[in-house]
Image 1 (tube, rainbow, N blue to C red):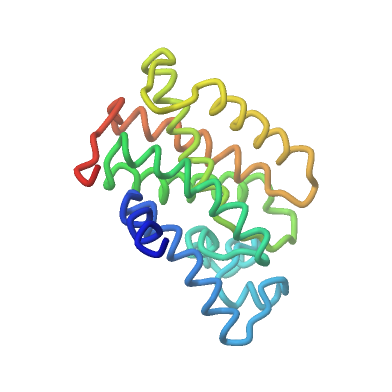
Image 2 (cartoon, one colour; image 1 turned 90 degrees about the vertical axis):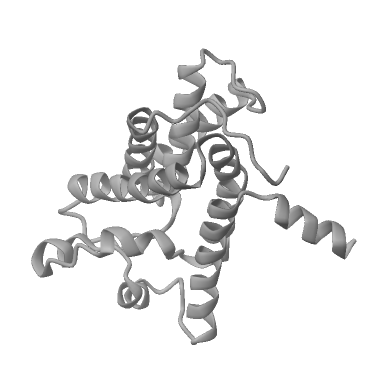
Length: 205
């Protein structure tokens, strides 16, 4: 059983696994240090996004650092669960470098849209959802580019997941829906600009 678990971890795409582990590690470090990930003021001290701090203090780094912070276990679990599977599919077909660019740049794009549309709101925000939606957006581009014929991807399931996830963001007042939308659009466009191929075979499989 232990060997099977190790082999399963080794079979995952390396860059996506690294992103998942970094997000989990940041959460654990904050928790071990006695931080409260549900406390907005404490999350600000760790780099969460807050429009007034960006506009008034010029702390633009928050548009990046907030991607690796999460409000509680449930928030972390949901984002990492989506990333675990969607990110693996994207990296397997685009390669680690393109995947990383889409994940990071797409995540920042989501945060920028959230910032631009919410500068008047005094709300602390954090989470990898913008980056996760960038990955989903890139996968949707692959499906569109290849006219629905992408090996290993359930096209209808993927599109349905994207639509439902975006819709949930707009219906739930506690979700930063603009970060989701910005990440999705950013990932879709980045995949097109980077000319992400339909498939890149993994060497470890």
